Image (cartoon, rainbow, N blue to C red):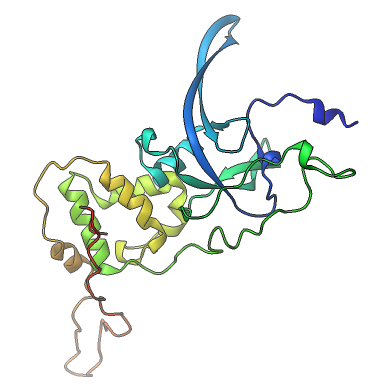
Length: 265
């Protein structure tokens, strides 16, 4: 018997995922806070840790700050709305004291809520001779999540609507950019103007804006589009040379359809 199988675990980790090579769609059934005693500076202190309970799993997922920020970006800050929602878990890698280790990660992309969730692989399900954790991937991940995030730019119209909604709530694009960076979208938006940011940020941006109270009248989105408009062509009268051509820039597309809720993007 492998002594590693006797180790007591209090939360799920990467070994509990049935699909070790791809996405695992799981459903949230509860969120809880647990209080425990620890020794610090030779004194007993009470601490707390936050736990996410998932359907089909006997143990909870421990929520550190990184996981919490991703969940807030995906599902909003109101935890009562998380119950019943589905998220994606996968086996990733992290660096700890110079060593690269396997770890369980929450995917930053929203999950199709119609996909059935997976359940924990248990030792009783393994056939004779199989190892724990299972070495073969269960269902392929392709059906659960696109291989790449939506990299199509959101365009000037949608970006202007976002900026107008932010200003209506006394916030700016810089506030949203900081929120997106902490939620794992930093590389997707680095060095980009709002219209050039990928559509993958829209669910997180929508959740961020929806949770903010309105504090002033909504401005005309057109004023933001003017900020990003290409400069007019300047032609040298002597040579006929175009000094700052606007050629090659894509014209703004048609205005997006209005959704049913009050967030117009």
